[in-house]
Image (tube, rainbow, N blue to C red):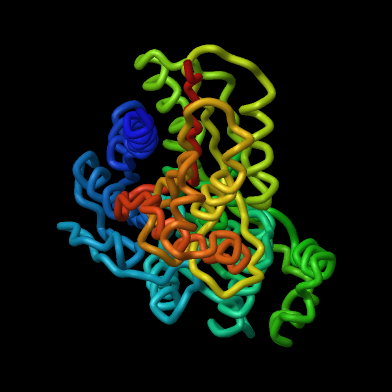
Length: 422
């Protein structure tokens, strides 16, 4: 019976990924609302950036009435593929490198001479913040990389990280719109940010920034990160912004974590599962998220098979030297607390992009037996957890979820299936 629960959890996870299919989302939106026709003599530049850039560009090129004057795809190496009619380059993720800087420079070159008759069509998905970078004047890529590494290890949520990233960039926080002005800008956006704040997705290249340099400075100081920053970054954040405004763009949300949660709910209900209210804001530290999941699952009594569905993006405060990711650590923490859940159950936590941290796993799928299976393998699960080594722990119990790169990203989903025992 446990095996069937595991299969059901994997099928629900796949339905979340399928609902976030980037090509289908682009096709549906262009069918419902085609782009405005070009002005006489106008040019259309199409740029796709993010983990879903390849399928989004393919769908756009197939649906547009004529070939664009320029088409550029920027994605991560795992998701790279040829796109007829488009130039394809890669950046680095999650920490940008020289390839990311080259991608940012290429974008600025493409848009800097656009005029009011031209159109910039952006296809934006998760990961774009690191894949395409353009350090602000006075900053180097090494400066930005040091800041990004500190942010990823800090436990800050994505919105607060992106406030800081935007303040150090010529592209983020509406910088792309400012560079492309006075061209008309339309963006289709696949959200990997909980709450779908368009300013935070890929650090908001086509929307106004989350805040000012002063806001970023205050946040870094309050979190004890200021002294870790390079001197050039401190000097930049101490300098007030200019008066340039961000031109408006047409930003259209075409996919999100909430859409994928609803797809899982519909599939679970069709299969006869009782599904309580969706939880679409599972954020914060993984230890707190694990407790919240346990609280939700044990706060009500049910005598029928129940699927508790969660969506969000948690954080991990790194204190060890192990390898893993937020989904793997969350699954391991649920396995540690197995005796608090009644009946027969399985729990899956996975990233919809198929990549959890610097590993080949999307997340973990655990049961009542997982913690003991790790011990039986000769490993110490508590020690591995303390060392942020959730990958090794789950691998020892054959509890990793590995689906490969999915070509999409709408953050993470969690599935807790519970079935009362006779």
